[in-house]
Length: 446
Image (cartoon, rainbow, N blue to C red):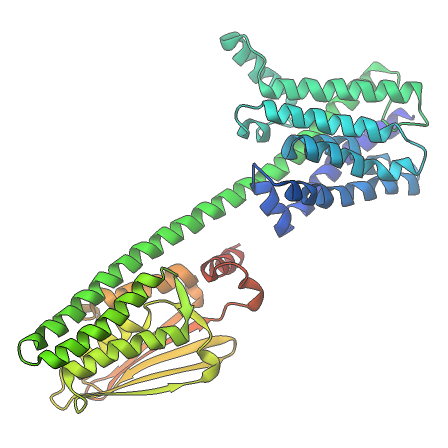
């Protein structure tokens, strides 16, 4: 082979390895498989299939395009598959990426790449800590320096050094097979020692760069997972605030009737039992709006018994299409409670609560309105309590800037609270809705 062609091919191959790895990690399924350290047999075959397709196409490209030697990275990615997927993935992957070469008479490529993948998988099994696999550096001179420092302290060969030696030995064997049987095996080879040294270095760096790009995706996935868990913990904390708050207020309503009207108190206790049963049945962050309205009906029944039908009236204008939209659970109750407590209750003659919902521009609009006393600008911050603060915080956690909460109040005429929330898309409904909202927020923020 021409020496200049070999050196140019080595440089192009480094960029190609980074490019292919970057394209692979953009696939959601590949990222999911990459994030798992232990995989089922089916998942290992999925991993092999996803990686093998572009690599096999590269082998074909080498045969179709004259002197485009850099397109063939089957040997390097057989090692990558073995070290990230294990012996089965490495062996099967080595076979899969070598199939195109068989049709061009390079029959030694398949068993050699299969062996390379299996040996890399064996070395993966030998790693005491799997994280050391991902820290293999393309700057192999620094790896050697770290090995020397560790060897002085422990006098042991660590995993990364073993992996480095394995790649070097396999590369040597590959070049020797090519030297003996050039038509049955492909390798970049030239008798000059400096070119051979460049081939060794290029092979190590190609494998290391691919691992580094894949590891960056793993780190990003881990950060997203940690952020999702933090969101979940935060939501659970907010949910644990709203439930005792609601229960405390409802029990106060029941206690006021126990002595003077036991029958009504008994009716309220039955309604309260229905509410508590629903709270204990689910811990979901999201529920259909229909369930949220049913929950509010029981709550309002309690309040109507407390205030009397002549003092508290409820009217609902709910668009049927909006009732199946997923919304945060326990979202309406604090709004309705505030409408009663700060709007209707202060009026001697009582008042009405209006619940409305509709779908507009791929968003659900929910309104809670009262015709109570209203308030002036700045007043609600001192009187709405933890309920409204909880709703605002939960919407911020779940939707970020995508959700809008508006308050419009006129003294003596009442208050309107309007929520405008994005509707999760059907393709995002396969997992939890909280996860879908989180993914939507993550993709928007990036």
